[in-house]
Image (cartoon, rainbow, N blue to C red):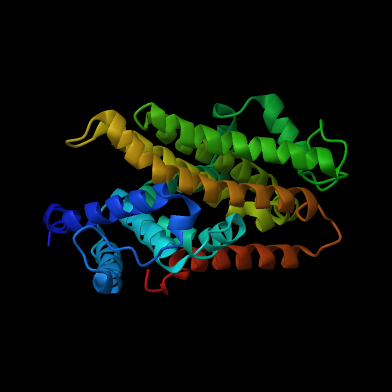
Length: 333
C-alpha cells in the first residue's frame, strides 16, 4: 500500500486521537487521571482495541519504510496516548536514556539515505587524499599552509612532549576545551550548511574530509605512524561519525528546501527539522565523548601502541554494531 493511501485510510482515526488528546490535556491534572474517558464516537470498551490499532499503524509505517515525518508523528501520538491511558510520566532522564539506547540507532536507520550520502561525501575524499599523499606528499600544501603543516608535524613528532597538544593548550583542561570547540565547529558547519539548500553541508563534509585525509596521509608518509595513529585511534570513531550525522542532518534540511513536494518550503522545513535536530543530538553526544577521549586517553605515551589501536578498532566495531542493531526489539508501542 502506498503511503498516501495509508494516510487517507487511517487519518480519520488519527484525528480522533488528536482531538481526544487535546481534550484530556486541557482538563487539568484531575481530568488527566480519568483514563477511561472515551474517544469521540468510540465506546469506552473499544479504547484498548483503538490503541492497539494505533500501535499497529506505527509498526506498519516503520516496516514499510514510510517517510520519517509520518513515522515520528505516529510515534509521538502513540506515546502521548499511552501516557493518557496508563498514566505514564515521561522523565527527562529516562527519555534521554531511551533515546541513546534505542531511539538514536533507530533514527539513524530511518534516515539512512542521508547518513550514507553524508558518509560518502566525508569518507571518500578522506581516503582518497590519504592514499594520494603516499605517492605525492607535497600535495598537502594545496590544502594547508606551510605553517599549518609545520604545526601538525610538531604536534605528532616522536619527540613531542605531549602528543596532539596545540601550542595554545597548556594543560589537559585547556586541551579538552580546545577539542570540544574544534569538534563542535566542524559539526555546526556540516549541519548549518544545510540551510543553503544543502550546498553548505556538501561543501563542509568534502572539505573536512580532505583536510583530515591530508593530515593523516602526510603524517603517515612522514613516518609518524605510532604517534599520529596511536593518538587518533581511540577517538576517531565517535568524532568522525558525529561529523557524518551532523552532515546528514544538514542534508535533510537541504532536501526539504530543494524538493518540498506539494508542501510549502516552510512546512517542509519544519517537518524535516524534527528528525534533523534529533540527529544533531546524537552527533553532539558522540562529539563530546570524542573530545574527552582525545584530551585524556589519546595523548598518553605510557599506553602501548598496540593497545591504542586495538581499543580504536573495538570502538569502531561497537559503534557500527550499535547503529546497525540496537533498538530493533520494540515494545508494543
